[in-house]
Image 1 (tube, rainbow, N blue to C red):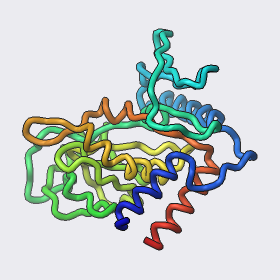
Image 2 (tube, rainbow, N blue to C red):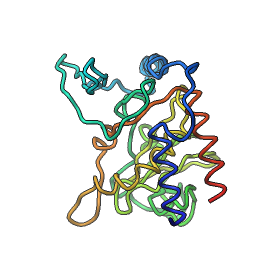
Image 3 (spheres, helix red, strand yellow):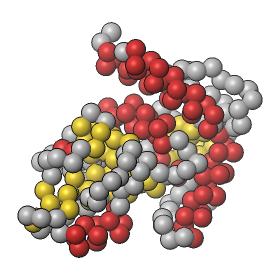
Length: 249
């Protein structure tokens, strides 16, 4: 088994709830989802995010199958990618975090201005400043009204080489992003866990992409990704174990 295959196997076990033992004292993930919903409502009232009018609810029926309830009240059986522990929950990615994108327009480039970062700036899990073209401060401010990147957000490429996620650790200069998805952080969920899920899901992201000229994954596709949610304490245990094992690899 190659190092990459071993890493993929570790992340797969993590996202299936098989990497660390289940603790019966953990609260069910449904309680975490209630807190996430409350936080999102607060952010909506503050005008920081918009309400998702298409938000759904996924639940397990008495027959053990999974169903999705839509805003109009209709319910549909759905297939989930794999089985997860009873205390976990499936959600659509946009139900727990705010999934946005940067600009897709070609701006006017200038000699002296603000960096416009693209997928070329997502290198080995880090966001790098160079190489980048520059745009005016005014244009950067306009883009950042909707697409400002902040600490603990996750960036990933939507066009070309799909994926290459980066968990933004620090923002100490102004920049804007183009052709990237922005997974805005929510304090009630560990964004490191979301990051490792996206790394795990990267192959599927590439399979989802399409395009005549170059590969492309849409914002709608990203928002609809099925995401497994464990409790906060289990998220933390999983992250700790992933880091220990990846260091050894």
